[in-house]
Length: 97
Image (cartoon, rainbow, N blue to C red):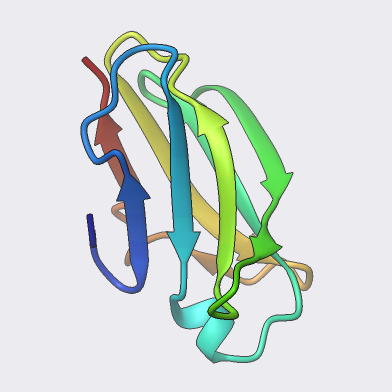
């Protein structure tokens, strides 16, 4: 599922404890970032975590997380220079079933 600004999530409507693949080909990547990190939290940004993303076969960044939330996963991205892509201040949200 393509969300917005070069971000896709599969599955787009995960069940609790299901693995989720997040792909990032957004502004930071297009600006030449050598490393991108996923910054995410659950149910209104609780328990925030930052993890490095790996390049996929297409050259974009990708990571796998578990849908450990009761209701939603909130996320954004940053590069190694701490430039952020937060969807114009809106962040991204995935609903969890």
